[in-house]
Image 1: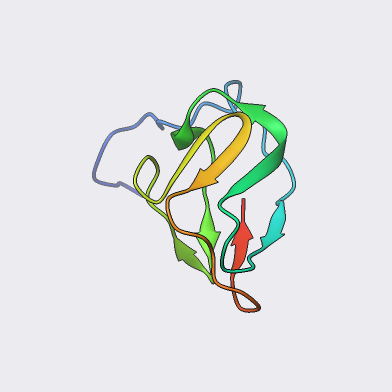
Image 2: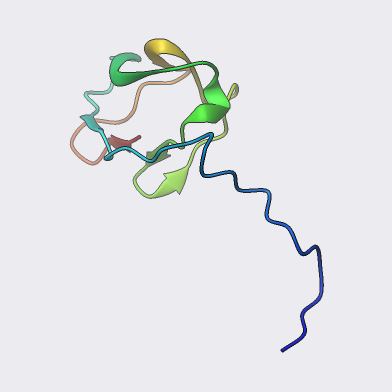
Length: 82
């Protein structure tokens, strides 16, 4: 079967090894969280708040094990999935 587009994938399995998701619960005031695994830059992690993807370097920054939101995830319903 033929297809349109490039024949090579941009995904490089040797660069990224998926880890298990990390979940944080918001309280409406905390903006700083600690990751279990260090990252080099914000785009190295995908962050979702209530299943809504967050934009790196705008909604959050991440470097090393520090995950910092620009606005605190809301209490009770605010779960951040990293």
